[in-house]
Length: 315
Ligand code: ATP
Image (cartoon, protein in one colour):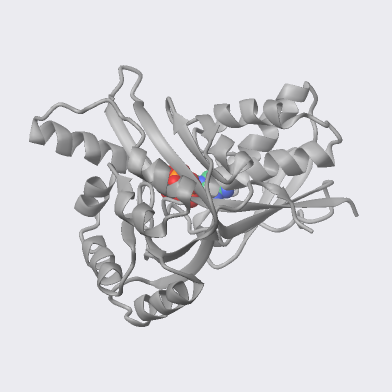
């Protein structure tokens, strides 16, 4: 059986600066993406190999998908699945009707602000490019990725990068060493469009102008120098007030991490996952254990490190 498995990381936004609402409904962003070692795996195979045709979780048609893992039930298995959309877009760009079965092993929290759906889309592009023998270079995959969603190109690239425009124009950033993270996972997700809507509503209610987004120099310097303390101080997310407004319990989660000595505490992207920067791997393990043992603070807490590479075949 010919099957290609691709491993793809989650991301956390180290800086998410959100500009004023544009006429096209998007916002200009300065988005510092950082890939961390929380991975989904997407396996692509010839039809008939992986997805049982009688399994209601599999979708009929040329691209079928099945999702496994604790939060599989929250992920659609129809054409709204971003991995299916990515495979379809790749087949279209190659001008042929290819077939594939995709199996997603999901570990990235769903609707958690860690771009799990975008990650699966990126992984599906890499896996189907290989399965179908298309041999497209990564630059071509990046273009298809940008059409699927603004977080998809970064999941191909990995590492640490700054995104401008809608976040999809990427420039890789120089970093030193490894940063150690704890992610506090919440029950239930937050819808990204709803969080942007709440951000616009809070800003309109405050009545103040919204500045053009610019990259934080202290943040870029801390990344360059491998300075975890400096990075912890510089973490910033313009969507955080909106996420806290929609999910007030997150304020307690962030505070608990700070009290336990996190160098920085931030809502990840549109939330509700919260990210904490630790001093070391051992500090991260202790922080995760302490956050996870109190069921009032979060559902569970996991450790991860970054930066890690983007979507690539698993060995
Ligand atoms: P982002 O950080 O990019 O805003 P997110 O991490 O908050 O995204 P995702 O897990 O990417 O959110 O998914 C958001 C929604 O997209 C889910 O609620 C789900 O309905 C839909 N979705 C489509 N395909 C997938 C997929 N492969 N994995 C997860 N969710 C998917």
